[in-house]
Image (cartoon, rainbow, N blue to C red):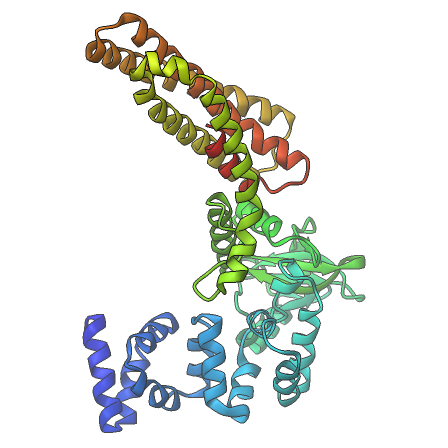
Length: 428
């Protein structure tokens, strides 16, 4: 069935109260598809949709929704049923969800959960936001280094339902320090009597609980892992971060950078109050206002020249727009580089010269075209040369500015995504 046909079939079963037919449809859907179906339903059918789901289905489905929708469903379920769902949710997702709640509500929900699960979630929430500690999950499989492969496989079978990914098994010593990692493939190919410490990789790529989430994303991308272990002081294994959480981080960081590049500020969405949104946007816009006044006064100083050569005024907005555009494109390249790579001095110099050549090639091409247009339109070779050379120079300067300004801001610990875009656009 198509998505619309599934929606109609679900509505029909809800109207007729056919719970078994409803389950027959739902059991064929992935959690994401269930969430999409829920959002497509008319509001009057959503309560029954939730009531017809099992606790396990509710748990998998609710994690695919936005936070506001998750909280709304938890309130509808009531404290008893909602705490059963919370007990089954991934601990990192639950910690992220509870972060935005009032302290009293957090305490109420946690107090109703199983004590062990509640304690784990509280521990995660103690780590700073956007760090590895807040992202990690404590549901993973670890094995002592003295185990044989047979013992490891037996433990893996017993605890398989607790592990989100079974690609790697993490090896610990008597003090629970991380000492190695074994892949699922190694277990399959090894002899059942082989010792884990003899087949494990002792050089483990790991992150500390306080590592920034962007750095975690870089490491997972660099090594193509599907999960990475998280340690505390003295190399104690405390959790695992999986690739699905990192994908969420990448999307979140990309959205934040887009907001900053457009000078819309941080965390402004459909639900942000007007005063808050204005407060977050105003500082940079006020600065750009004064820069614009300086630019206007410079242009005003050449007003007499512009009166004599009116055609120049026609080309000025075009030159400014093209320069701002090429500067912003260079900015985007640099910001992506700063997010995804650790740029050293050699890489920075290489990037600057690369963008310089880009500016020269673009500048020469566009300058020749606009010079010809100016000459044909006005019949003045001088005007064509002036406009063409002006465009060439400004495009080169714009490209270099879009490369160098964010690098300087980054050096002085200022977020280049916030300041560079509006600054370059205003200046040119």
